[in-house]
Length: 112
Image (cartoon, rainbow, N blue to C red; front, side, top):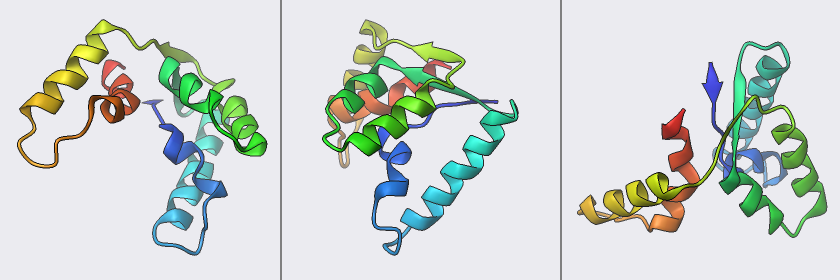
């Protein structure tokens, strides 16, 4: 199974784990990483993850995400197709229209 994880999820173990869903998401990430190491799941990286992670001000978080991305067996580059799709979704959304920038973080997953 191919899996795409965004930067927010990849950084979850560094968030306040006593708050809301953070603990569950952090635990889920570590379970997913175990499956990746056993070749049961295959993580897919993207230019979006690399770009966003390059701005991460916390060295330990940045290194953690970089190490996970080294396990990637696939890669999706942010291209015009993804940018157009983000813009189309934003325009079509009647309620709570997400910004194209936010959509480009997740849309690489739709290209798997």
